[in-house]
Length: 196
Image: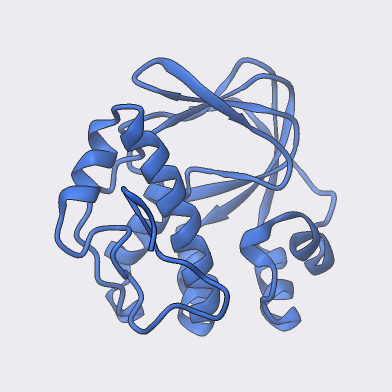
């Protein structure tokens, strides 16, 4: 478990829309609801926030600091402010635990990559139980989180993560339309071979 402490500096809907692509274009009312449920946590340098192969009930928005992303113990990159970690497993867990969302899911719930702080970080924890209600009320947000999870999953699969490869091999897996309907305006479908 990560030894972090809660912090109470409020997050605003405007900050969510300005810094996290996943929240751009989401109605202001929905963003106010999301902002109100985020748990702000401070994590010291050198601590593991997300462990590869674990099932997660939360995703984390990076408000400040840098995290090292690893697959099978090898660093594959870093993420900073405006990016997320843990979204693949958290999204899959939400889909599996809340069948009323009508998300078609045939994928591993295990996180395909790990994340460790390179510097002290301020993270915003977005829990599955809160995500459930927001995704149900806002399919556009569900698609945005799905696309972020898909990108992470593809990167991890490319680097050899068994959890990610399993997800890509499943019919109707993470990148194959978890949400019913066509792509939203301006979206592209991403597959292992590239954009189509």
